[in-house]
Image 1 (cartoon, rainbow, N blue to C red):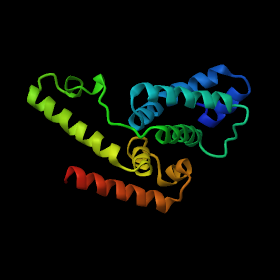
Image 2: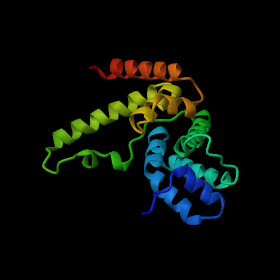
Image 3: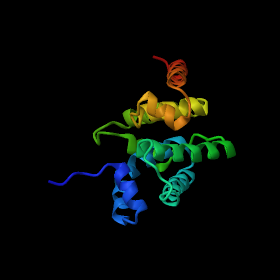
Length: 182
């Protein structure tokens, strides 16, 4: 019976020269990591660059990797640091790509144009409200809601305690409710 290797085992195998181990890690994490970065940085080209830089750092750090924390936590720490560097360079702007057009947001092809436009407008309002959150609040909200990480894992990634994470989440949700309504 074959046992599926953990991310940590795969990373150690990759450090020892097993390229297939890296390919497995990349396949497991590319989608969630990309969505995390794309939702945190605009324009899309900058997010793509951050995504590539994150994997580049993983490759460069492979020989120094020690499984002291979960691989996913370590990976998101790298991405988060790169995103913070980008936030410092240029405050993110709300931008809707062609993927966010009303036609792409229409879930049911039978929807009327008014319904698709209404959903598009709601999405745009949410994106604007998220962009207005302080970086620390937006980051913990993304990690919690989109990546479904625990408060402890978010604390490890962001370098703050559990109570600070809870506080940032609470303030972010309060600001979103105030901006968007109930």
